[in-house]
Amino acid sequence: MKAIVYTKYGPPDVLQLKEVEKPSPNDNEIQIRVYAVQVNYGDIVTRNFKNIPSRELHMPLIFLLPTRISFGLKRPKRQILGNEFAGEIKAVGKDVTLYKEGDQVYGYTGQSMGAYAEYLCMPEDGTVTTKPTNMTFEEAASVPYGALMASTLLRKVNIKSGHKVLINGASGGIGSHAVQLAKHYGAEVTGVCSTPRLELVRSLGADKVIDYTREDFTQSGEKYDLIFDILGKSSFSRCKNSLTENGRYLLSSFKMGHILSMLRTKLGRSKKVICGIAADKQEDLVLIRELVEAGIIKEIIDKRYPLEQTAEAHRYIEEGLRKGNVVITVNHNNKA
Ligand SMILES: NC(=O)c1ccc[n+]([C@@H]2O[C@H](COP(=O)([O-])OP(=O)(O)OC[C@H]3O[C@@H](n4cnc5c(N)ncnc54)[C@H](OP(=O)(O)O)[C@@H]3O)[C@@H](O)[C@H]2O)c1
Image (cartoon, rainbow, N blue to C red; front, top):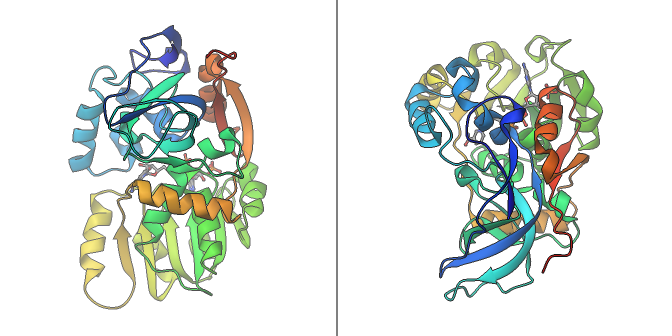
């Protein structure tokens, strides 16, 4: 089968189209013919992992070292990127009971990656489930990572109707879903991103948008019940005055200092720091499908690239041009 393979860390050109062995499902696995894969933050970072300085990764050293070892210190251990996809089941292992050939699915392979390929295999109880009926394969492939991360992280804070919520990093994979979910919970949402993506964030339902290149939200005098910082670009000390009395400062990217702030604010009833670790479970993806089918989560596709042009897709994102999801489409040319 065809796959995009990389054998060394580096710029987009390290992504090469190659012929590799088609994976066969184990007894508990399903074999999925991939039709669409989204290019996300994880793909971009993992492609160049060795060369990205630790300070830019916003991760405490105790997590960073095992992550670097797991991905490969000098060269990538897993050579096919891509972890959120949509496709169709082509074969099932003998113990599989949940799926059959022809079922349309969407899913998330997490750190195992492997979706920049014509086929992939996953255990039937992995983070995979029936594709939302109201989405194309391309739209469905754009859902899993961001929606899973945003929903499991927001679950840690109990948003109530009428709460004021600020999402710092509202135009990316996690933030774009956090905006839509917070609106669904009845919050008044302010989305922060840079100039080219303000309209995108507005179109996702944000009540207000702030351009971080022109305005510092901590200086506006507004107070929020929740500040959700996706990349950890702000700090608790700067955000403290922008939180209501019982406000929460939720981080999906954090360093040791944030963890110490979380421990310091854990006791007591007022402003709290929460460093959240997200999970990806099949049952959560099922709930997300229900939200998609109810029209609560939508996806905006900016660009589509064929599998052969995956490097081009990475380049487009790195140039900061993306305004929505960038999806790789896999053309099977009517192969059986
Ligand atoms: N806690 C967990 O379990 C968990 C799980 C998965 C990922 N993560 C973390 O989540 C992060 C990736 O999130 P993502 O996939 O949403 O990334 P992404 O798709 O790259 O989006 C990044 C967002 O941050 C914004 N941004 C960039 N610079 C900013 C600044 N200086 N101030 C405010 N916003 C800024 C971007 O806006 P513009 O594009 O407009 O500049 C964009 O909205 C990583 O740090 C990763 O480690 C955590």
